[in-house]
Length: 516
Image (cartoon, rainbow, N blue to C red; front, side, top):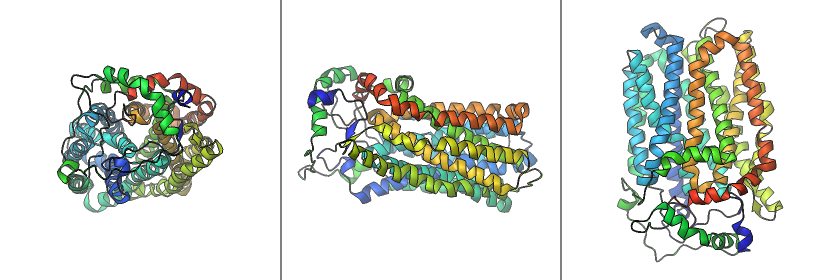
């Protein structure tokens, strides 16, 4: 059995996985209420972050009237925001592994407070671009450390559900933030949008400071003077034994009551240091991105879906202030209710039902779970998402009634939510122990795609027109969302072929689940 298990592809598991330790301080052994507090704070942080990223669109008309900003300038400021998201991921993830999750959350929250104050005091193009870059850097961990926290706290058969809740928080902020900001712009002026954000992020900082526990848990000590290469050499020989233990049907893990619970001071420490180098965390995301097809696909699919969402939001803010719609800031904000409503069944289907579906498939497969089992639920989206894009884009081009545009936007919102949940859960299930660095690469590609698209959007629309632009986008979306067919057929073979690389990378992580 041990020999067979040693050759398993990364991600192939017998439920339950990951295997918790007997230590009551292991986050997997925390009580449900303790996990709920931490995860709720993560969701609140994510909601506020994506509200901050999207509330500015409702003020574009007032930016133009009061400060004279052009459409190119406003699209460029949105691109600068996404550029900050990409840069922040590269900077923060090595620190997450070195000093812990908690201090990075706190520093991020402070940056967000500062960026909101700067946004409220914007007068020049430099202010606009600078505040957006800082806003992006501050919010960068919303797309990486959140997934790390989920991996710290929850088992594999809960991943899609909790990812779904995190993405529901994401899109609640992205969709309902502009609804609220539209009313604020009309009643108090655009600067008060950012003052309200300042107040909310200040409250968020206090909640994280007093209530968010460190979820980083170190499973093995680094030897004095040791390197990650020493650890790899020392640990590889025990891999088969560990897999055999993981596959044992009676491997129940009981919490050892003799192990003392950490004190409040330890649980809320400002820094939780790890010995050893983190230099590999600076370059490994790119290596992961080009080495593992599952991560490559997740980066492309999630990146493209979110880039097109940014396009739809920007197109609304550019054209729907004008005839035949003549929307105010309130109207632009209210358009986001449609995708918000659609995101709720997206969370249910892509999250909870997807988790139930893979458990059912795993039982049919003699208790063995393959991550590719998740991907069947993406395939219907290859039809629904292009339909939504065409309904919105062609409707806007021909001046169709706004409810038709809202339905198209809602259909796309459903696909964005469900597709994002499934693709992120698939990546996490395949490469659990390196998910932080993997998602840096995913987020880097996603944000660079969005930066490029937003910088090019104005000349792109001028050159192709609204109709042809949305037709092209819909065709690309179909091709991307049909991609899981290849992974369903060959994904496991790819994981087997790259399993040695995964082992080497995972063994560099001091918080990995494989013990040595």
